[in-house]
Image (cartoon, rainbow, N blue to C red):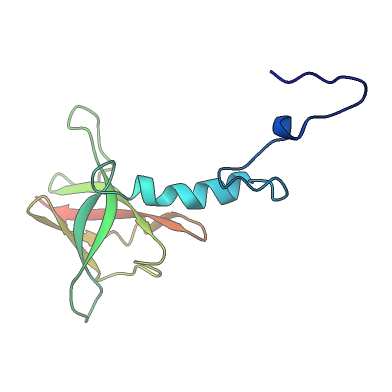
Length: 133
């Protein structure tokens, strides 16, 4: 721990960001953006998903899938419909829409027009999906 002696503030006590730059402060937004690569890493939280925009060819993306807990009552519109949520990077799925499909775990899910885009910001999209049982 550095001490403040005779009005001297030691340089090594000044807050430093991860890049060692003493002049540019790290904001929460900057840190979250840099951490996206961690959250969307398939060795960590994400998995590879096949995304097929309506009328286009399928592409592989990384996504964080959150399926409903079978012990909890899901968001239901009927006995024959399963729902889940998927978090994607905005750069990979900028504008999801009705007719888009996502395939993971051997099952194909469709964009849920009722829940749609649950949350969006500059970097991610939380999308509601559904599939017939």
